[in-house]
Length: 447
Image 1 (cartoon, rainbow, N blue to C red):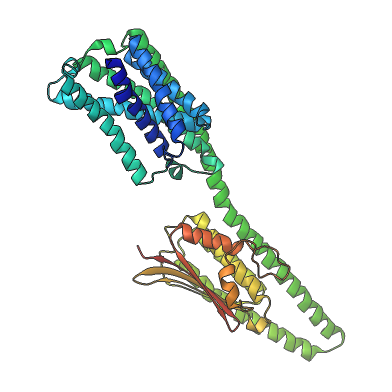
Image 2 (cartoon, rainbow, N blue to C red):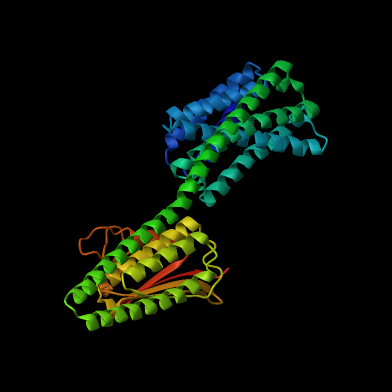
C-alpha cells in the first residue's frame, strides 16, 4: 500500500513537475501534449521505483534516471539530441538541487536523514516541500515566459558556444553529484551513496574528460571568433579602398576629358580660350580643395579609425562625382554603444544611398549634408541629400526588402540593413522627402 501511495502521490507528480520545468525552459507548456506528458510521468516513474527496490546507490541511480529522461525526450517528444540532453540535464539538476535544499535545511536544524522520515507527518512535510520547490520553479518559468533559446546565439560561429555551455553544464552536474555525496555522507546515512574509491575515480575521470573537451571547444570557438572579428574589421577598409579606387578612376576620366579639350584648343590656336579653360579648372579645383579641407577638419572629431576611414573615402567619391559635401560633427561620442561593424553598415548604406540619389541631379544641384551631434535627450545622425523625391505613399516601404529607388530595380537591401541595425540597438529612424531633398535621421536615447 505504501508503495502505491508513494508512486501515485510522489513519483508521478515528481516526474510530471520535472517534465514541466524542462519544457518551461524552452517556453513550452506541459499541457500542449498532456497525454504524452501523463504517459511520460507514469512511465518514467517506474524505473525510479525499480532502482530504489533494487537498492541501487544514489549516484548511479541519478545517472541512470538522467539517461531515461534523455531517451524519453528523444523518442516520445521527438526532440533533437542536443535539446533532449539539455532538457534531461535541467530536470536532473532541479531534482538534485531540491533534494540538497531540503537536506541542508533540515540538517541546519540538527535533523538528519534517518530522523526526517521517522514519522508520517515529517514524511508528508518533506515530500510536500520537495515537490513544492519544483512547482514554484515551474510556475516562475511559465509566468516569465522564459525561453533559453533567446539566450543562445543563432549564427554558425556560436554553435560551439552552445556546446561549451552544454558540456560545461554536464560537468557541473557531475561535480554536483560529488558535492551532494559529501553532504549526504557527512550528515546522513551512507547507504544512499555510491562513494567507493572506484566510483569516485570514474566520476573524476569523466569530469577531467569533459574539461578537456571544454578546452578544445573553447579553442575552436576562440579561433572562429578571432577570424570573424578580423573579417568584420577588414570589411570597412576594403570598402573604403574600393570607394577610393572608384574616385580615382572618375578623376582620371575627368582629367582625360579636360586634357583633350585643352589639346583641342591649342591645336586650333585658341590660346586665350585654352587659358580661360585652365583658369576655370584651377578655380574649381581650389574651391573643391577648400570644401575638402573643411570636411577633413570635421573628421578630426571622429574617434573611431574605421568610421574615419569610411567617411574619408566617401568624401573622395563625392569630390569625384562633383557632389557638394558638408559635414558638421559636434559630438565626441559617435554612437559608441554600436559595434564598429554595425556602425559601418549604417553609415556606408546611408552614404551610398545619398550618393546614388544625387547622381540624378545636375552637377550644380548635387549636395549631401551630414550632421552628427547630440542633445540632452538623444544622440543623432542626420544625412540630407538632393535627388528624386520619394512619394509619401512609398516612405513606409523603403525599409522593406526588395524596395529600390534604382531605375533598374536592382538592390533594395541597404535601407533594410540600416533599419535592422537601428532597431537592434533600440534607436529610431525617420525619413522625410519633399521638394527634391531627402533626409534620414537616426537617433538614440542619450546615456
